[in-house]
Length: 103
Image (cartoon, rainbow, N blue to C red; front, side, top):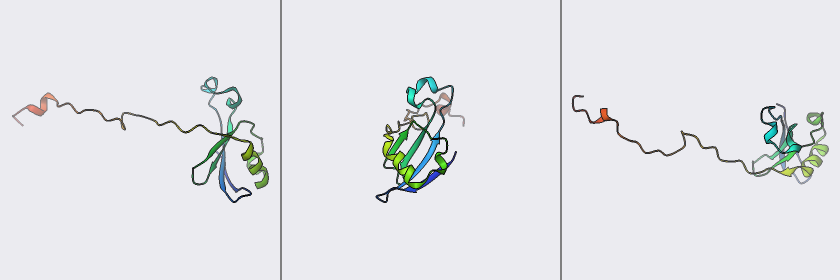
């Protein structure tokens, strides 16, 4: 994965990288994003955008061209929280062995 940084015309620092859609998940994506997209993210992480029309030579484009593409990109949906067993609060039930007196 290539990661490129640039500063736009108003001085905001952006990072940009290409996301390839796994073939096994492409059918779950919106049609315009099935072949991958570019992610534009402000350096502080406060703003993220996606561009579905990925130029083949995007990593070698000028700062001005990347900034133009960034303005064309659409806001990305907020990241979904990932829950897992390690983050869920579960009651702790005592085991029968906890009550044995012969320990």
